Length: 253
Image (cartoon, rainbow, N blue to C red; front, side):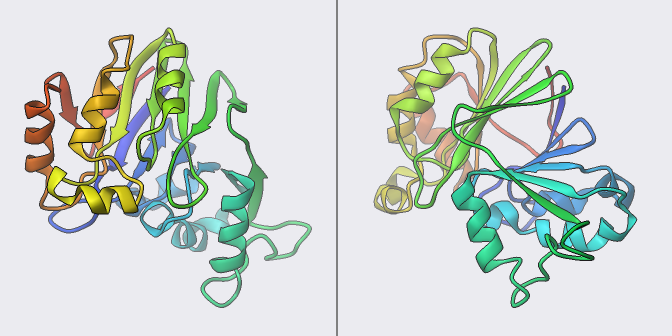
């Protein structure tokens, strides 16, 4: 399994792209602005999109992805997510008011988009790859994902505030090689982080002490302009063995 970071920022501007990971050449985890960096040929090869939640920075490229390649595909693109997340997208995005309902065109019997509900702790197997939804604690229904290949696993927290289940999942995975966890705001914005259900350095540092294994820890979803402060504050809290995720980074599992 090859995972390429297309976007990992909490915003845009100056080369920043919002969350999306390309898995091999046929799968996306989230569909933020990072997807716009793919070529048309690469977009045509996407068969599966696993969304963590319905917020715009994680799904913004999905409508344009479908619009750009649907007519060239021989089968529908499969969108995986919690039932509540898929319902939100069906009701508020693919509703003919914001964007066409690709689950019904060109016909309901042979659409360009297919919804596939998944549930927490459910493993989806695609060839030799296993993708498992894990709990998240956010302002809307949300999950993270555990991606397992032949040579280990990678855990992506998705957007989340502090919650025990994330660390239980991390500690349960004996083959965990990489942990990608969000930290969106500086400590000075802790009230905003709490209200919007995101980590800040103080809360993430406390939770990282619960980690019993030793994966490489990568920090994602840093808000524009606060990146250096967030990483420095993590270090001041004693979290030194972490690095900020970056566009173009590749993981091999």
